[in-house]
Amino acid sequence: MENEGLADHQFMTLLTPDRQRALRSLGRPQRFRAGDTLLHTGQVGDRVMVILAGRAKISYTTEAGHEVVLRFAGPGEVLGELAVIDGRPRSGTIEAVEPVETLTVGAADFLSFVNGDPDATLALLRTLSARCRDSDQKRIQFGAADSVGRISLRLVELAERFGEPDEDGVAITLPLTQEELGSWCGCSREAVAKGLQELRRLGTIETSRRRILVRDLDALRRRAG
Image 1 (cartoon, helix red, strand yellow):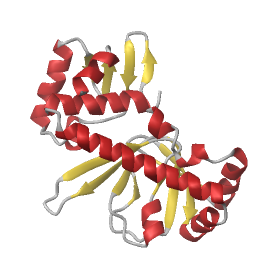
Image 2: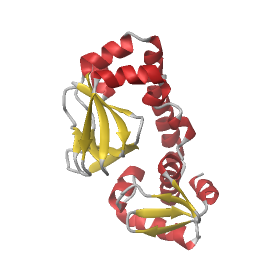
Image 3: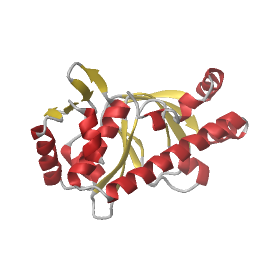
Image 4: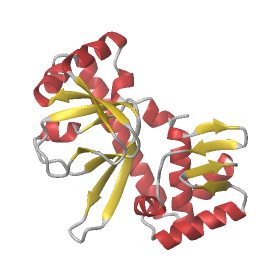
C-alpha cells in the first residue's frame, strides 16, 4: 500500500514500458546488503540509481556528528538525480536498510535519456514536484503537531507507503530504530518511546522488534492531524 501522491509520481512508474526498457538498457544492475552505502554525501554526481527492490534511508550527518534522517525510498524511486542535474556535490548519504537492488545509470547517459525524450523530462519534473509538495506538506503538519502527532504522521506515511496488509491491521516492517524514527520526527529517543507507549495504550498500534502493527489507521491519521 503506497501513499497515493508519491506512488503515482515515482520516476520509473511514470515511464511507459518501452521507455523503462530503454532506461534499463543504459544501466547496470547492482545489489547491496543491508547497511551498505549506495551514495555518499559530498560525492560528485556521476550516476543515478533507480531502486528496483528493497528500501533505503536518505540522511545527513551534521558537523557535530548527529544523523538527520530526511526520508526513506522504495522501489521505483530515482536517487542521486539532483547532483547530476545541478552539478553540485551530493547533499545526503543513501544507505540500504535491507537488501537493495538498483539500476545504476551513468550521469551522461541519464541526462541524454531525459533530454532526448519529452515524456521522460516530464516524468522527472513530476517526480521532483511531488517530492517538494510532500516535503512542504509535512513541514506544515509538523509545525502544528506535538511529538505524538509527529510520530503518528510518520507512522501513517510508513503504513501508506510501505505497509503490508495484516489480519489485524497494517504491518510496518521497515527495519527502523527508535533513534532513526526520532531523527526523522525531530524528537528525542525518549520522546519516541513515550509516544509509542501512548499509541499502544490507546490501542492504535502494537510494537515488536523492528515491526509496528497499525491496528487503527484512521485513528492514527486523526492523531497525526
